[in-house]
Image (cartoon, rainbow, N blue to C red; front, side):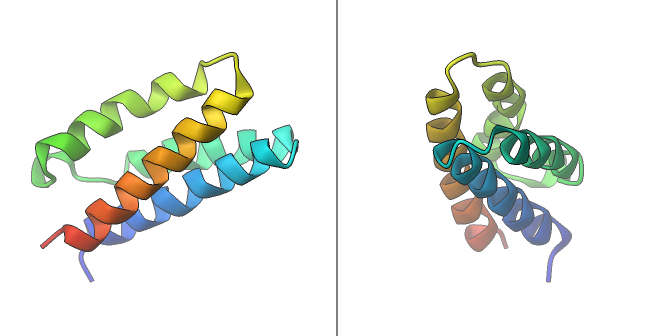
Length: 91
């Protein structure tokens, strides 16, 4: 399996856990998985992904700084789905 597929799939799972953490009012858990997601982001080789994935990766840091935790949860879930789709469509 391709290194980017694994990294994107793992990033998607971390972001899904961020969303679930905030939805369940487990802020500490959500913050831990957000840090894991940001570490995982560095594993993706941005030179070999599609431009929209590169754009999403660059915006990922912005959702961490959002004050409204409900918005962070929604954004994390959306990014999770987009990265999951990118992992499945990578060739």
